[in-house]
Amino acid sequence: MTQPPVLAAATGSLLGLALGDALGAPTEFQDLPAILAAHGPWRELELPDPAKVTDDTQMTLALGDALRETMDRGPLDAPQMTEAVRAAFVDWSVSPENDRAPGATCLRACELLADAGRPWQDASRVDSKGCGANMRVAPLGLVPRLGDEQRAGGAQLQAALTHGHPTALAASDLTAHAIRLLAEGTEPAALLDQLRAYAGDNRETYHEHWLGDLWTRSHAASAEEFIRRGWDECLDSLERLRSALGSASPEADPCEATGAGWIAEEALATSLLCFLQFADEPVTALRRAACTSGDSDSLAALTGAFAGAHHGTGTWPSEWADRIEYESRLVTLGALWDA
Image (cartoon, rainbow, N blue to C red; front, side, top):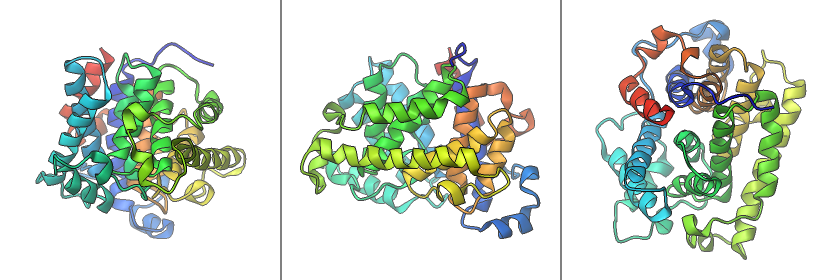
């Protein structure tokens, strides 16, 4: 079932992502008993003060700014987007603000991307499907006036610049698609079936215009075989999500049901589990995602992106939203796309 498009979905999604990121940052790398001992009951988790984000939000903003720059010059296309996002990621990697323990895969890929003469496919880490691929992809789900092929190709391209594993590409595509569906009014109860159908329809679709010959860096016999592996792993994760929604207790650590979220398909499934278990309670969903034994900042960031796309900007407590780091940049970018 689909309702009218969500009011201020882009601003709500970007703020939700940053809030989840900041909420989950202090609990990352801790097991659940340690988190509860340090922070109290998970339903009462409060935003840190100061509310600082991690590389998840920083890279999301880098991607968002690059997309805005690209689309200021015309329709989104692979060559222009590649140039802009490559430059934005490299600039982020050497920025003095990049001091939030960023992932090694992103840093190594950006180091290689800085060599302008190197094809970006040779910089991509084709053996990595870390959640760095999709924790930053929300802007591709929020930018207006994109065709399906542009959104899918762009989502996979931004992932592939650092994480070239086919599952990283498929999970990023699915993450952006989920955010787009929610922003357009898809009801949460219908979301999983639509994502499973989308994954099934795209199992053998290799976006050569956007990815070039990336697949040849793998051991796959063809581009179709390469990308099919990624979609099938994502379909397996979505099946685990379906099972968890029917059986997992909201009080239990969601990582036990759908994975810790260090890899892209698990980050998608576990953040969706947190969102869908508390679809009408977005702040509770953020707290649930932040109080997990896995990659809590990335899980809560994606949960916030989903919840904000569904509810819009007014869903977040003003005392939180007003003091989140990069609040001005997040609101400015969101307002542009909401307009």
